[in-house]
Image 1 (cartoon, helix red, strand yellow):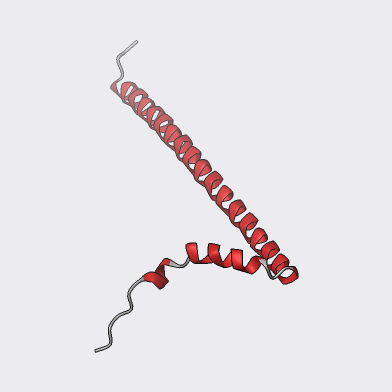
Image 2 (cartoon, one colour):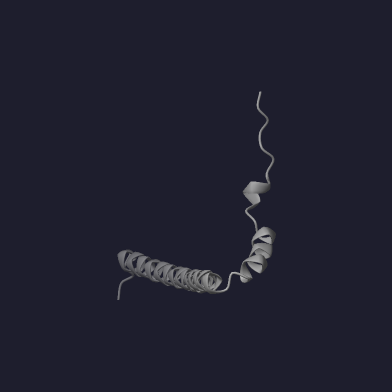
Length: 93
């Protein structure tokens, strides 16, 4: 059997392609895991936001029935006020 240089080159190319495919497959799998983790965090955030919106709606409905709760709600509203409202206003020239 003769040593064929072309055969060695093709085997080398096949090895490099296989190695590259394995590296890209591992990179793809790690990217998918990162995406799934971010998606899971996003879903938790959205579910929390939905729950808080429902709670705010329930509180608004309850405040219609019992106006005495408004004083307590105002104390929470002032503690969690918009930080943009606290910024100093620009002075007029």
